[in-house]
Every structure is written in structure tokens, then in C-alpha cells.
Length: 276
Image (cartoon, rainbow, N blue to C red):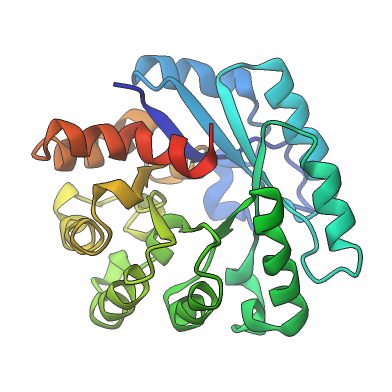
């Protein structure tokens, strides 16, 4: 079985640029590079990964593509471009020359305009992705799921993936409105979901595997294993435990699935989605 970590990050820590990494997350206030991740992948039987942007600049793309060119285990890069830029077609044409550039992401969760993804200029950028076979990672909080539904409906031929289950409020057990919106979004066949980032939405120091079961039940029922993919969100996950502890949550859950479903969840979905 091929196993792919569909969501992790590399960075050279910059306290000004990376000010989202506050003192409560001090364990990750340092550099994290491919040589730091590889031992974790090997220990957990993961064959490769997709690295995802954490800085909204095109310098980030150069930084991540350079890593990918030097390390075979990095199978793809999800970068960043200004989708609202007038020269978006030109930028996408440029990045299409890089085999490991698979798609793009914007940190929508942090935008004051909660519906930014429906801005006409942003929409124009999304419309340009399909021509170059680029995917789009949707990073949002639950209050933005309704806008993601509208976005996905506008572009039925564009491949989208929801990062981190759209960050449900696991710590306080809030599930009702998130559940309704997740089911609504899953009706769009072009939308996939990453089972990632859950531990950082739980109680970092006292979470239990049982805390995640209601949320896992929802996404597996809504999307099915063929539209779900494993992601570690390393190194961010380290604030709530190590890689092996984090992965144990999903290992325990998917052990009850069929071999076919497990193959999709652990790797086949990510390979197909990102064309790895």
C-alpha cells in the first residue's frame, strides 16, 4: 500500500512573517526542513508527501520547489499566487513548467472578508486554474463553508480539497452546523477533504481519540474514502503531540475499513487528486 502525507509544511522560521506562531506554539518556533521530516515519514511507513505553502508570496514557491527538486520523497507542491492579479494567466503559465507544482492555496481563514473566495477577481483566478490542471486547497473555518459550497458549484470541473476538515471546533465539541455544511459541500463531486489538522483544533494537552470520532464519522460518511486523504499538518501538529501520536488517531479509525477504502485514504486519493 502506497502511503502519502498530503499536507505538511517546511519553513525557515521568521518571527515577523510567521507571527501566527505565537508563544503558545513555541515548540514550532524554529526551522523545519525536509531532513527533519524524512525520519518521521520512514518511521511511520509514509512513502512521500505534498508540501503546502505557509507564506503568501511567490518566494515561497521557489523555496518549496527547490526542496522538491532535491528530495524525491516530496511528490508535489501546493504553492501560492495572487489569484486576483491582472497577470494571473501569465503566472500560472510559468508555474505549469514545474512538474511538481500541483496547485495553489490562499489563507482564506485569516481574511476579514469571509467571502473573499467569491470576489469577482478571485473567481477569475480560480477559473484560470483548470486550463493548467492545477488543484485548489480551500483553507477555511466553519463559518466559511457556505461560501465554499457556492465556489465549488460555480466550477464543477475544478478539483478542490478542503484542508483540515474546515477546522471544526473539536475542543468544545461543536458539531451541528459544521456537520450540516460538510454534508452540503460533499454533494459537489469535485470537492475532496483532507483528514488533517484535527489535533490542533482539540485540547492540545488532553485530547483523546474519542474526541475525534464524531467528526471522522461525518467526513467518512459524507465524502467516502475515495474523496478523503490523510495529511499530518506537520510540523504544526507537534503542538499537540508527535507525528506518530497524531497518526495513531486515523490508523485506529481506518483499520475497520475495507482494504480498497484504506488504499484510497492512505495514498490513492492523493495520487489521483494531485496527479503525483
